[in-house]
Image (cartoon, rainbow, N blue to C red; front, side, top):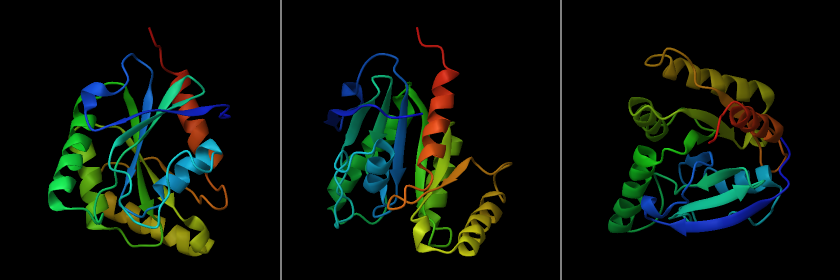
Length: 201
């Protein structure tokens, strides 16, 4: 799938104010500093569509972008190590939960994981939450350019061994690098295939 247009639509902290209608949407979420904004900009070929920052936790709202006038890319706040107050963190963690609970237009969530690190409890717990609540998700391993191929393979296998302790199958996953455009076509083609299999009234 080729992205011909990508436009910002709305930012908010209230799920009820998210766009109406039945346009499918795909949510991107991950631990703070995982490279989410860079990945979104890489996928859309727009360098400043999602705001990147050296300060983790910059995204603190639900951000909707309309892609090709056909589907929404949803940029959700990161979880984990964002340097914000406890009260602020509670607020946006609450609307993340509400988003996954009530947003019927959501087709798939993409959980971003830094491939340089061993499986992190916070990522595993979040995937468990999605699984227990019946939210379809895939894993996107980021920053693959930082490792050699054998190290990438080992880290993916580490994740597989941990996840398969509690999951029947390894979730669909993608290897990406925002700086090298690695994985771009695979992720977009996956979304395109899901969209083509949907019937929208």
